[in-house]
Length: 583
Image (cartoon, rainbow, N blue to C red; front, side, top):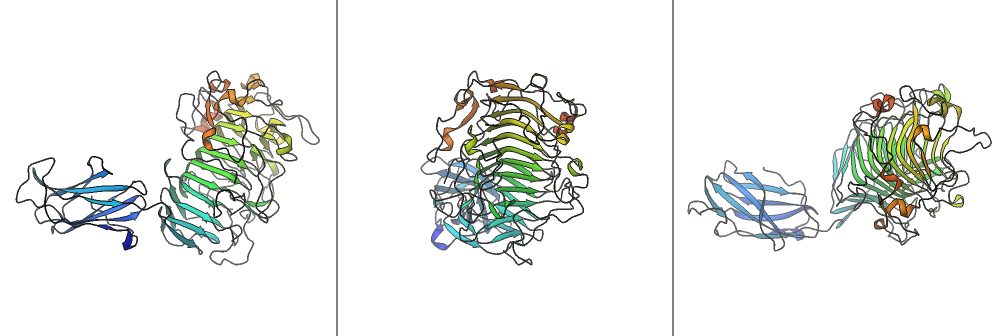
């Protein structure tokens, strides 16, 4: 195919080699009438792509592009149809590795006859070789490239229906000197940040590793047009509206109420990390690592990690978006927070909390009640029926591994619960591991929430909007939070819901690798969430869904014979692209 180079780096980075004579072909006889291409040159497009340019000869039929890495053998990577005039052609070779030498040659074809060009060599540039400050809103379609590190120097909004495309391997940093610097993707606009396991897209602090803290910058916010259950009032994104007006690059008011398109599409995030984010201009008014406000099911979310955020790692305000393969290590508040009528489907989730990290001064403070999952129905202005306001929060949350501190002193003054279900929330929570939470594995906080499950010890899946099924409570003494002050005793029957309490197995026995001590020297390689041989997590799952659970899950979430986020016989999907770093 003929492609046009989208972007050339400075001339000092070009590798230009002319071809002056032909050499013998490796794959066919040479016809004196067939000439090799002329003027073959190569130039970097980005750190992972180059453009080949050359001039053909009138009468040529096509050109095979061959590539070799270093001193390796050549192999065909593509072909180009000969231009009608027999003049210039080009080919973009993508998906390369940064800082790597590649050799190229071009095979000219006329029927069965060929001619082979001389070789040229080009070395791709390093990831993040250049730096660019982002100070204004993005209002036209824009691409960010992996050879450049982008510095968010303000509250940057993708607006006006624009699409921001981010290449694999790109790093985006929040400017430390701009308190709360963030990226917002507003309603009607899109972000397509599609990384790979080898080249994740990373949003992180502008400070050097070893000096980073939660709250060093703001976070990533996506606003869609799907419904929520708060109506009749204007609802702002938490953490916004600290300045009046709507000046580009400032923290002006962003709202998300009134959505009406469940299938709304805000783009795609895949293999994306958000590190050391979070910003709280006032109490209970915080930006999170990932904020999804009224995001619709047309949006695609997969392989995302939050590391050391000041507030929640993943927060869903209403909406219908699905997500899978999510990792949260060390949150300042909740790892997964869903409310306001969120009806998405989540599968394969990991949350790890071992400590409370020191926060950046001035950015806010950690919550007093962090939980692994904290789900609410409707609360605050616009909840016309109070906790009973529809649409109910009824996510499907399947195959999760939630590990807490095991120490109430580091779990906040009222936290330390694995799953906090409250304020009339529903949902289907199935095939999970809830481990090492000091207060309780689960809290069904109020009567309205208990009513979603039919106010029954064993909710009927044919009719219930709330079910907690096939969970393993590991190294947690209390399955359900007991009566405490205004908190009633709402609990589900263990055996009737296939809830297994195991107080004898340790985390090291349950998982293939779990360090005895987690500190600032620990790395992501220390965690292997695969059930160990003989682990209670290797079995006990609900393999076949029924009733409302089956309807809500559809074909998106499927049953498994195991519990937790890792298939005992499956891929270690979190490895290679996640990190563990406390600073």
